[in-house]
Image (cartoon, rainbow, N blue to C red):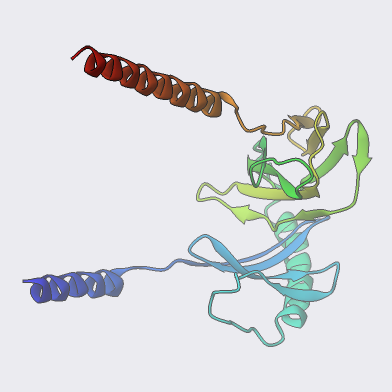
Length: 235
């Protein structure tokens, strides 16, 4: 019976794998201020061109199969030249159509549970905006922060809008206040989110209740033993 069950289960898995559809995506985008080339699959980024560092960046996790794209960065540079040329042609051909504008929604949270003096990462998530150009700035206790900051590529949604992640590596200190401020052409004023450092302190409640319970239990045993001994003495 166990052998039959195993075979049926294996067959179901193989059948599921055979019909699963992967979705690949390639982004080649540019504007007057931005440019991006990225390849991904199933909603996860594989590689992108870093035009500031003039190099390609593979973003797959360590356990994933190694994938290489020879000449990816140089090819991306050429694609951006073509994109810039086409941008001017399209704008002229379509007589500068009205641009769709969608405002962003911003949220802010820590990557891990906050522990005192343990390095952590603050994440500023910006979602549902268009067009892509967007900027994110950080402060700690009202002082601008420019170090230990990373940003993601623009991640497309099915509705044509984009998502964006900004990361700040920090060491939590009780009482610190962090902000991330988002600027986008759809906003009349910058959108700011605030995050207070609240270090989790282990609760003493369970330990106290366990101690009291144990003490009462021992007292009950002692009392029972006392009356048992007295009862035997009377006999």
